[in-house]
Length: 274
Ligand SMILES: [Fe+2]
Ligand SMILES: [Fe+2]
Image (cartoon, rainbow, N blue to C red; front, side):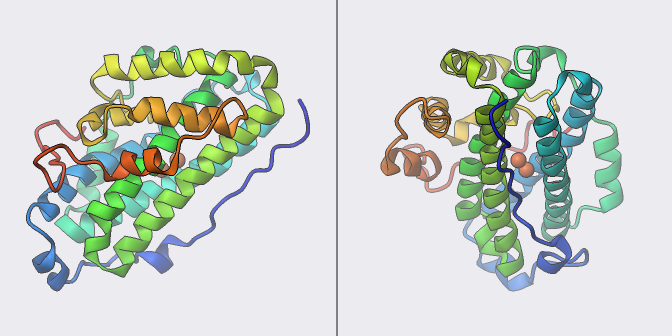
């Protein structure tokens, strides 16, 4: 190991941003552009639970904690606290938008089945976990940026602030994973590029999300431009000092692109939320 990774956390208090009993004022629901309320409900019906799935990934890793380094485990504690805050933040957002009962969400979450077997490539060791985490977190940065622009900003300051915190937190998770890789895994940096290609292929082949936190974008790929994985892989390589960062225009395209003929990428309700 070379030096200590500089781990950072975006500190914010959920109760200050979105109180438990918050309801979205009627005027925002009435003023939202056509399709936005329904699409946002469909989006939240999946996103709420995939944030909560962080707990199952954490438990899976902790069952193997003897294999993991101290900096990685420290990073994971910060990460879990944030992800569970995201879970609660999205529960409150969903409740305030659609009136879904917290008890119903609890029941739904408890019934989820978390399958790790399809993700064995990502779970091989600390190095693969960290690179997959970088891939997942930077993907979340750009997808939440899109969600903020298309959804969160339409529903008042509280909800908009949640969107901003999500983007910022996921960016810090990406950075913290990079810091642990730089501190503890430089000897494996020749594998990063090939491994990212493997993860990207795995994501395309999965077609569905296995409720283990990783690769949850497998269920939303139609919302993103085709070179998405290739561009975020280059962001990862650049952060590790292994390549050139994509241009500002390429990065903007990741969250501003919409398919020809659409002003808003539709989000279907047909995939079960569980
Ligand atoms: Fe998150
Ligand atoms: Fe995250």
